[in-house]
Image 1 (cartoon, rainbow, N blue to C red):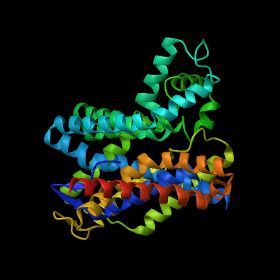
Image 2: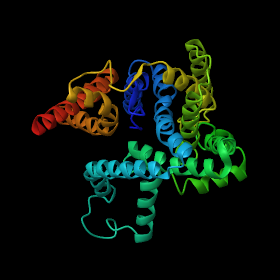
Image 3: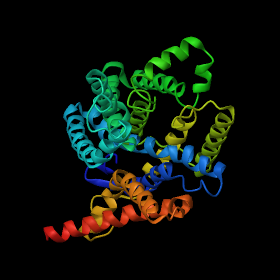
Image 4: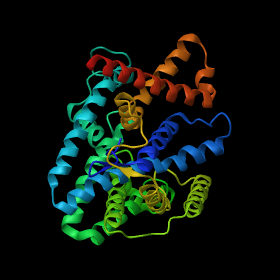
Length: 365
């Protein structure tokens, strides 16, 4: 998930390490590991703190893809990235296609033929386009079209408006996205705005997509790369990041209490948290060309580098497996005990990923 942390064949260890943390946070969003312990704590973990994960991956792509493409004028770098992204999107979509077809079958009432099973062609095509380009072909896959669309918009903005213009435009889009996300309660109070957003939500389900959400963080990642290349030094204090994160937790709790949140992916303070966090991470780890400090074994090295993306792709399948096992055995505690549920999903996913890669490497030896 996100571009590999490479810069002229070098890797930045702190960015690679945080990709693992971010991947585990994404899994937490989908499993709510503290739900059965404390609802408020689970909200803060999964609906506020974990919301740093996807912006981090956007910034990784901005740092290594967008910055290089804009600096060198090599649009081919973006095209190659989009081609690779498209192949991944198609592959994972095919993996989850049986689940989606089963859900469609259930929605049709179990009918094999008849009007209930054959929706209107135009509506069906619209829903397919909506899923492919905005909502994702499975619930966690929205990130893939978002990063692709956001990358195209961000690069186009840089070429036509320059850095300041592109950042301003992306910032405005983000603010508009806020009004359809965590600040939707404000939008509902203004009839004209509500009508506009109701129209937008017929095109996509959420404003956390490639139009309103992704461009700003992609540009911030590219800006971080540019500042580092120019040797711009900034004071980076962990206490500042902690204070910003605590303030964002307060923002989330206030919005939740007010009942304003239609969704909870976007916060006013989130970009400021990410700017500080990413700056610290980009300078916080050793950078080398030989991957020093990482497993020398090729399989283990590959697991370390590709594991976060594979965990992102695989964990919803493990969610289905755990819930299916609980239903068959009658062991509801497998998912009712939320910390156990999270451990089963993440541990099972990592075990299968490691086993699969081990078998693959043995086969190719």
